[in-house]
Amino acid sequence: MKTFATALALTLALAAPRLAEARQITLTTTLKRFGGYSAYVALYLTDPHGHYVRTLWMAGGRPWFYRHMEGWMRASHGDMNGLDGITGASVGEGRTLTVHADIADALINAGYSIHVDAVSEGMMDSPAEVHMPLTTADSGKTVRGRAYVASFDFKL
Image (cartoon, rainbow, N blue to C red; front, side, top):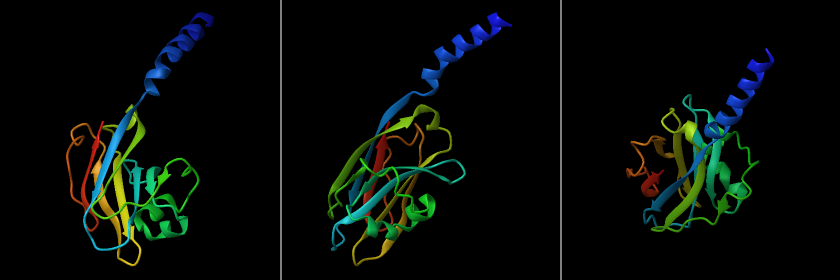
């Protein structure tokens, strides 16, 4: 029994780093020219059941405005814990936001999705601006958003 336990512990010790491996993903969001103030943009991840996993990036410095990103608010229940270090300035019309995030390898090709919500002060909200599966097949593909996003892609 002692030999089995030792072998099991050694196997787990060698396998654990592989399970925890992550890779850096580059997310690129280019906004349309929409004639308004700079946009707040939320990039977040959901699991195969559509449940919120985490925020990848939040562009826009005034947290009171996050409530207008309805998709992100609904998914995250407005939980602003963990946003420190993953927030930046809002994004001007026609500008490109490029951010990097670490994604566990186990989430890729496993039914997870990347979502983009956007809103500009004094203009309409655009929840579910972009919804894209987190797959190797979709890496590098460009999609259009509904209102503010001219193009979005991610690269693994």
